[in-house]
Image 1 (cartoon, rainbow, N blue to C red):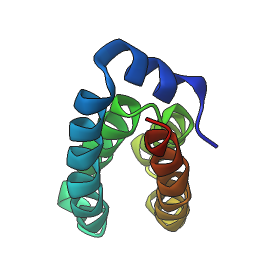
Image 2 (tube, rainbow, N blue to C red):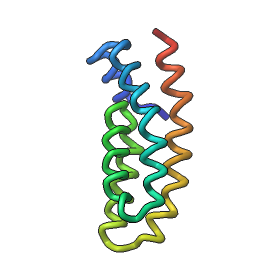
Image 3 (cartoon, helix red, strand yellow):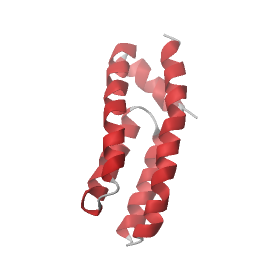
Image 4 (tube, rainbow, N blue to C red):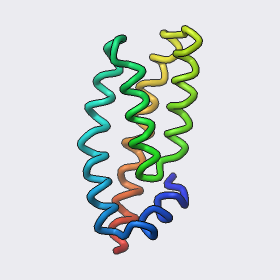
Length: 105
C-alpha cells in the first residue's frame, strides 16, 4: 500500500514533476530487475532499484531491498535470490496504487 511519502513527494514537487519521475521509474525498474540475474551486476542493480523506489515514495520496498543487500553482504546468495520475485510482485502491486493517486489530480 502506498505510504504517505508518495503524497508528500507529489506535494513537494508537484504532480507534473512527479509524473515525469514516475515515468522514469517505470522505464528503469524492469531493467534493474533483469540485471539481478547477473551476479556481477546484482549489487549495483539493487542499489539503483532501491533509490528509484525511494524516489517515488515506495519506502517499504526500499527497506526490503536494503534487507536483500544485507543478505548479499553476508554471502547468502541463494537466500537473496528468493527475494527477487517478491520485489517484482511488490513493485507491480504498487503500480495501481500510484496510478490511482495520480488520477486524483
